[in-house]
Image 1 (cartoon, rainbow, N blue to C red):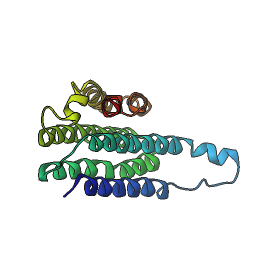
Image 2: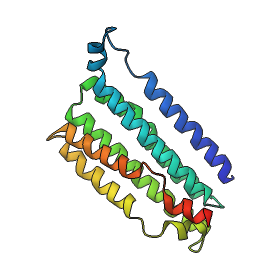
Image 3: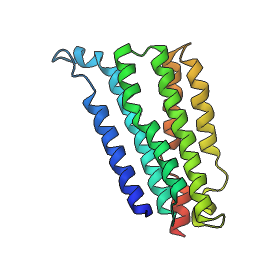
Image 4: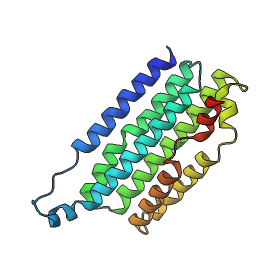
Length: 191
């Protein structure tokens, strides 16, 4: 299988995830601003989830762009990443229906943490198949943001039982840290 076919499959899964998230959202009960205000927490959670899926997709795109080869291991690790990303609509809906209760907020963190672990695993699998001297390996270098993200998500999970909003603030902070695509790869490819 080529990396382009893997990228196309991943693009399709990400598009379905985003579509499911918006289709799962409930329309406000009324037609005034007060009704829309009552939907604000789920709208914010949706926006954060949309951004997170977009961040994974964007960085995945850059990582594949810097890769030349994929193998069976890469395909399976990519599926592992997609498994966790496809759970995002489930936890967003659970957060919505629970009115941002602790366990759903913690579950959201578990999903994000596992997706981040899977992404780093995919990065390592791609470097292994493309070589330690490949463009990707040289562009990535030490992976600090990825490790910081995993620890932040892991810390936010138990904090959800203290304050779900505190854990969501951590998830937002991690998303803001990743909002700009991975410049290490972009700058390497431009050189």
